[in-house]
Length: 265
Image 1 (cartoon, rainbow, N blue to C red):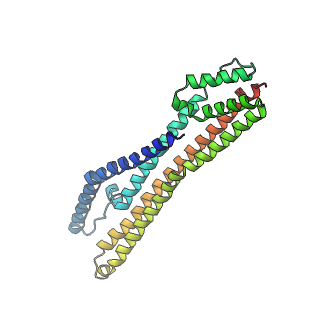
Image 2: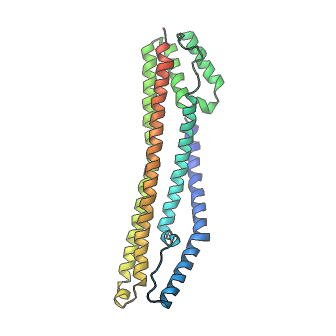
Image 3: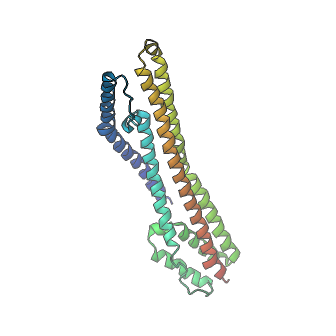
């Protein structure tokens, strides 16, 4: 676990940098030039035809800085979710292995438990040994070998699984923070847009409402994009959390069925 935490932290930092580079490049090269061209064309049509109804463009909806920040945070959160989902998937695949190494129905003694421990350490790569199932099995075997108590081995299984559930819950805090920050950024855009609109109220009184409408567009568009991203992100967070909780339950059931109930002191 000491090796995985720094590597995951480094992954998160690089994921944020890459998300910023990709999103900002798309905005500079495509979105903002396209939005400016669309608005210029719409202004020309309005001046030529007073009955023309202005159209909406996706480029205009997402062009502002608040929406750019929301997309950066979204890509950052998706990369972290993908990292954790891939790791959870690898641990679920490990549940298909027979880490006990004994025929079904045969009891596990202290000697065979130690043989299973050696098998796990030799058979699995160092990364796989840090998966939840491997850690639970090794901890249960070590406790059983030391105390020769089936109850102690069972207690270790449940305590390690409970600790893993708490750990995975705490590790989702960064993603939950991002999911909270995205609507907050959208509301910042709303406040900025309304403030700009109020600052141009004197022009609206004189008959020029272009600045007011553009500022109100910033307010509503930023909130719309932020809430839409937040809805999608929260769904993915709950899906990952359900997958992690299912993994803990499956590991506990695996150890109880395939190891603890076969122990004989």
